Length: 143
Image (cartoon, rainbow, N blue to C red; front, side, top):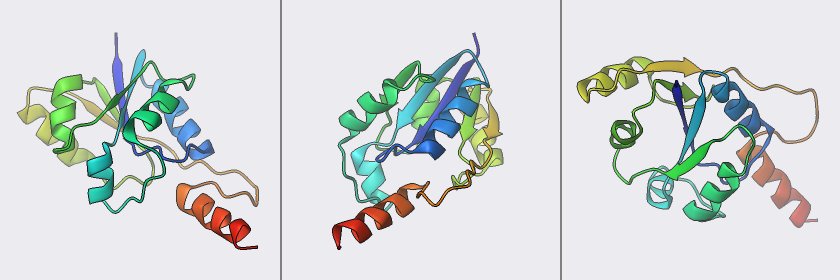
């Protein structure tokens, strides 16, 4: 069985997330999604609306997802060592370097591939990313 790992904050679920998870699921048999812990998300400048457990439960309910877990408070390699994925998928805009992930994973005895998912585009005026959704909510709320 080919195990795939996807990661993210997933605070406001949108079509870009769905695209990422659907594309991730196609890379193997079992999709495990790692939800950023509240601590790590905040360390990286994220102002969260929802707790890590709420975000985990929402993501785990999505059709492509077999399991959702909360990531550790250290670095991603602690979680990679625990999950031991065959494939790690990255969103098109995630800042991880695939070569570093492969090298550091191998140092920990995890032989993984890295797959960069494609950009999701839809011809619409609706906001499609978390930042754009937050901005639109603030605009609407301000009226």
